[in-house]
Amino acid sequence: MKTQIKLPILILFLLAILVASCRSEVTEIIDDTQEPSLKANSTVAKLMKRISLNDGSNDNIIDNANCFNLQLPVTVIVNGLEIVVNSAEDFEVIEAIFDEFDDDDDSIQIEYPIRILLSDFTEVIINNQGEQNGFMNSCNGENEVDDDIECLDFQYPINVSIFNTTTEQIDRITIANDRQMHEFIEDLDEDDIANIDFPISIILLDGTEIIINSLEELEIDIDNAKDDCDEDDDYDYNDDDNNNLSEQEFTNLLTSCSWKVDELEINDQDLENFKNYALTFNPDGTVAAELDSNSSGGTWSVSSDNNGLRLTLTMDSLTEFNNNWRLHKIEEEDDDKDKVDLRTGRDKLELIKNCN
Image (cartoon, rainbow, N blue to C red; front, side, top):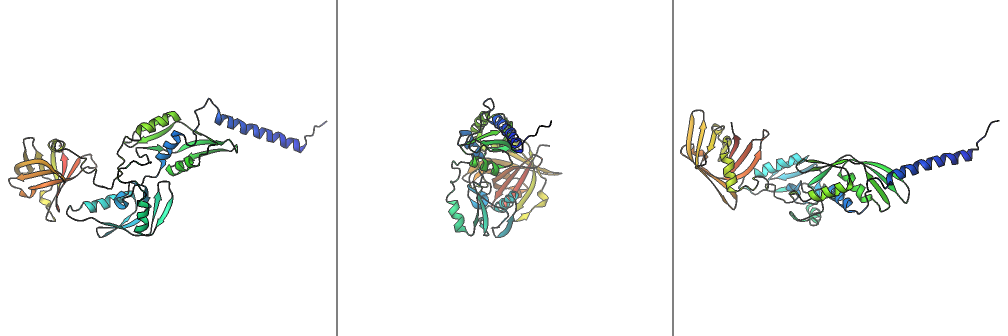
C-alpha cells in the first residue's frame, strides 16, 4: 500500500526545513561565543568611518581646500601655461612650474565647470569660482583638527556578515574601498548585527602593516595611530622640500660625502662645462672643486635668514659657483642619493651626493 503525502503538508515540511536552516545561520552570526558584533554608533564604528572619509588635502596645490577633491581630469592655467591634470602625478608638474623661478609671482586658475567629491563622497558640479568658494568656506583651515584620519588605511577587501533583528534578513557583503566602507557604516542600523571576518589589515602612513584579529584590537590600534602623523593639511606645497633642517644638520649633510654638480644655471644660461664637477665640503670651512685635471679651492659657510638656509660659496677660480645660495629643496633620487637644489633668483645649482 502506497503512502500519499498531500502537497500542502509537503510544502509546510520544506518550509520548516528552510526556516530551520535560516535560524541556524542566524544563530551562527549572533552566537555569544563569537567575537562581539559591530554596532551602529559604537566607538570603533565611528573610528572606522573617520578612516573611510574622503581626504581632500592631496590636491591643495590646486584648490586650497581640505574637505573636498577635484574630480580629474581638470584643466588649469599655471603661470600662463595650460596643464591638463589627469592624475595625482600631474600635481608634480604644477609644483615644478611653481619651482622654476624664485623671483616670480605664481598663479593658477581652474577652467570650469568641474566636479568635486566631498568628504562623504557626494559629487557636486561647480560652475565658477564663486560656487567653489562656498564649499571652500565650509572646510577647516590649514592644519586644523578635522574628522578624517589619514595616518592609516584599511587593506581591502573586507568581508562582513549583517543580520537585521527586525526583518531577520541576512546579508554578506565585500567592502572593496573607502567609499563602500563609508556607506556600510552610514547604513548600519541599531537593529543590525554585523560581524567582520577577521583577521584584517591596516596600513600605517609609513607602509607598516598591522594584522587585526578583533574589534577590540581594531579600536585600540586606530586610537593609537590616528594622531601619529603629519596629515599635511596646509596649502604650502613646498613645506616638505628641505625637511626643516637646522644649520648644523645641513652642515652635517654637506660634509657627509662629496657632491657632484648636476646643473649650474646662471643668468638663464645652462653651464654644461661645470656639470660633473665634484665638490668636497670640508669641516674646516674649505671647499675643493675637481673635474679631471681641473681643480679649484675656496671657502664655504652655512647660515640662515627669514627665507631659510643659505650656502655661501667663494671659489678662488671657477667663480661661477660663487653666490649666497638659498636651499630650495632636498629630495631623494631614484637610487636613494640625496639631491640638493640651491637657488638665488633665477640662478640654480643642483648637487647630487656622490659618496663614491
